[in-house]
Length: 96
Image (tube, rainbow, N blue to C red):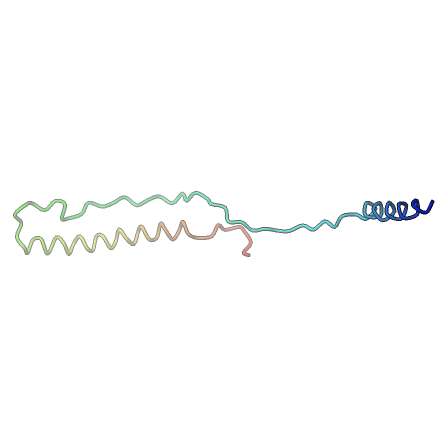
């Protein structure tokens, strides 16, 4: 009989844990999800030095190289604009 009282108390303690409802907590986790960028890649322009004939004078080469630098800068601007459009956050989602 003496052994029954501690066993009954232990069983009562164990069963009281089953009576309590578990605490449910909802967590919102923000995870970046990769999204394909559908920005079109600008077409590479033909560069003036590619059409330069062998044996061209230094003056011709200098003029052509200067024109190519300006054309490359314009092309780089188009590429940067396309990249910036791909890096923009997706609209319609709330900010963190």
